Length: 232
Image 1 (spheres, rainbow, N blue to C red):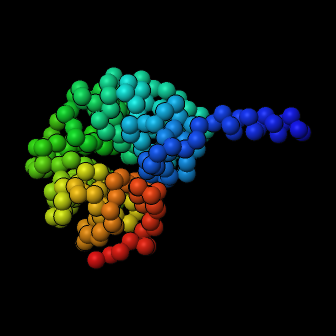
Image 2: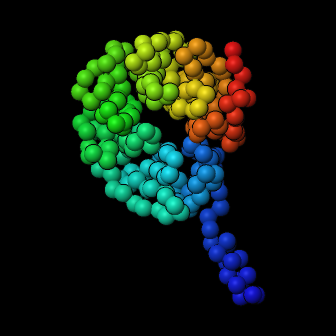
Image 3: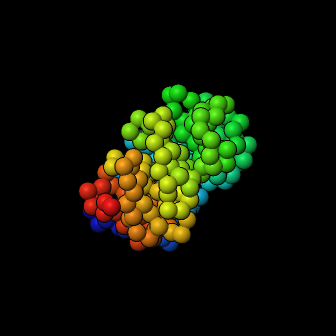
């Protein structure tokens, strides 16, 4: 028993300590190379980007994507440096030459993208596209799936296919779908929660993520339940 206890102490001493501010993902935070929350793992280093779906966490590095699933870490090669990462509804990694999905590298110059059963929805300065077809004109930076709709965000939020539109207080820099709405980070460092009927400020933030009815905000590794959101 004494030897077993000593071995556990040595293993704990060898594990990297959490470092730096937490990087939020849907279900927790990544602090340096340490994943905490809904998934738990030790990564080889701090990732550039992180996202998660119901079953796996994805951490993106230059030329490498790590998948954490059922306690195991798998390395997947990337043909470049990732520009964005989406795990939901399907996996989509933005690269200089297009968007990498499980179907292969698709040659679209996306600012952000969603891989769905209907195809790849993606946004750029011209509008919202579905594969090679332009659906909505406008300049967008983010796109998320929420409540059966695709929401494109720029200086405005456009809901497709319903056609609903809502002006935003500042251009959206990052967005994720929660059960209660679309959480987004705007220029100027303020987070907001968006629904088709309104907009609520969530406070200062530098990064955010959402999973089911919980929002994850940094710095400070703060969590906010949907029922606690200050509705306007």
